[in-house]
Amino acid sequence: MLTATLHSSPSRLLKATINYANTDSELVYDQRQAGPGPTHLLDQVNPQSMSIEDGRTLQVMGEKFSLDIQGFELVKPQLTIDLHQFDDALLALDDHAADRTAPTKRDDLIRREWYPAIETWIAKRLGAARVLTFDHTLRAQPSAEGPTEQSRSRRSPVKTVHNDYTPWSADRQLRQTLPEHGLNTADFPRYKFINLWLPLLRTVKESPLAMADLRSVGEADFHKMRLIYPEREGQISVISANPKHRWIWFSDMQPGEGLLLRVFDSEHQGLITGVPHTAFDLPDSSGAPRRTSIELRTIALFND
Image (cartoon, rainbow, N blue to C red; front, side):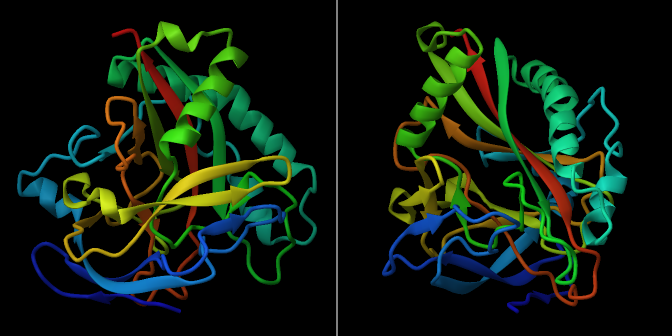
């Protein structure tokens, strides 16, 4: 397992392994399998030792993080839902006697109750005319002895640097999602793809999320990767190594907190499509409770 080394300093600086794309290999990820999926998007990655700064300490020192500048924000969403309403179902992932209908019930609940609550909160925060939630992924890896959940909504934490969209895939998702809600793309000249990442169950002590400050990345760092699904194909961006990258994480995230990630913005049509991000290994975390989190994918629509 790739590990990180913690340096004792006022800024809680980590020296950690970040898995970049190996651009000498074929950039394809096959998602046709069921279950939690692999932790790496590529068969061959390029691991690099990088400094990662704790955003909490940086905030105390006066730094502010925003979607428009760094590409991410630490938030405390005021949602009208109970974040613990399916804790028992998540804990049962390691139980061979668990209810095999639980994944369907859980996903139906998320779509019915979580989607509207998140749309309302993000629209208010961003000043958007409308927000549409079109997908979610639960990151909850069961133990090796636990049952395999045949659900594509659950995946392992991804430990390869990536961004969720390319210009092509963002445009396709927009044109697919808006008509499903009776909306026309021509009515919204600007749009943003925003992901909301929420820890569940417990404080994150294993496989936290790190983001690369958008000001530190270059167009040459972004590479299109082909995704293969059972019924279609897609694209995301994977990121190649660059010593100029500035990495940020937020220590000890817990339920009630979240991360907003700007993964596409129609005002920025270059190759830098959104904020690079990845899970990474913390030191001495092999015995820690496995990270459980959910990421919800939304489109924020603006009239001007």
